[in-house]
Image (tube, rainbow over all chains, first blue to last red; front, side, top):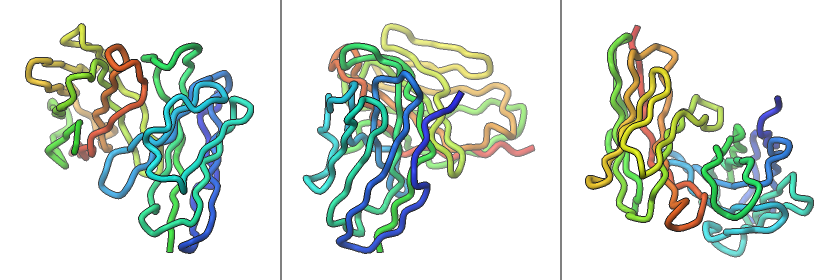
Length: 118
Length: 115
């Protein structure tokens, strides 16, 4: 079956611009995660959705970052006034988790969106 | 402050031999541990996991060992194959103690398996 998909695969933008990154989770997966991977680092947690609501947004670095998941499926990560330090690969993952905020259900990752801020 | 540490950036082994990848953690709340494998231009792929109530979990050629007192885990791959060449990430979560499924990753280790 189809895995997690992310669009675009690459995004180049200029400092100060607004960008949107999209994630399509595996069909039926209720939990969705966003991570950011900078060069030479492991992925870092940004935000976690259970259904339509953000269950944990403690990883968002500042108020320029915002994410939505209005219908409990597709999610969009939005970054305002981009800075060069935002350049990274943004990874999305989904898992089956049907209830609660805790689960050992496997998180399946998409290929990521490589964001470059010039 | 790295809560999950993979101190060796790379490892090279001969095909057929054992690969041992190490990982240390500092957060006592972590109670569920995972290994992910990543090829270039792809997302991480789940490999194997272990909960803190166990000290060993095996799946085919892959075995993960957990030493809670030392806050250390390791991934053993036997026998190693050229297709195992990838970046391996150790990850942890506080699923039971912290009631949160978010993963904390190490920096990764690049494994090269020589034919």
